[in-house]
Image (tube, rainbow, N blue to C red):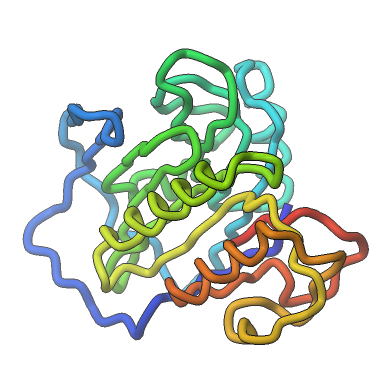
Length: 251
């Protein structure tokens, strides 16, 4: 689990919306043929006057619905508003609610229970969701309205160190494409497990990697850091000291 934060790519200005926004669910959007759910009204948006607690968590598995109440209970205890989940192992895409949270997930299109990402949102904030776009079993995006505009939440689960170079390159190419498609005035938050170890050297990446890294930098970290640098995303994982080393979960 990680501490939370968000990094707008550039200075944000007020987004004006004419009329009441509608919630669009692009389930299967990354696989062709988006399906749009019936329109429903949303709230005026998340108030930026209050603290928004956002975390990422590799849950190892969320394929069994019986795990959902336990997860929701822990999120509620920690007063989490938004969580990016990785290794959920739920096939296909969809949404479900449990214990005061709504979970949107994106998994394998062939029905296999492997990899998978999800974004969980507190029920009190769920009406602010305006768009849900599953991309594949490693990437998905949820767009929410806040009082000054919109935010795009992107959940990711990067290939591990042992995966082929081609697969890693394809993942980052697709992730960059997804982020490039986010409206430029949106507040951008990337949450997930990048399966990278930062090490303690920050040379060339001081603006996107915190000062409290640990371990020995692996090849995944070069890709993750370069992604942060190109997209102007700050890695909040190592902004404060940690008591133990851990693979890179990034917010």
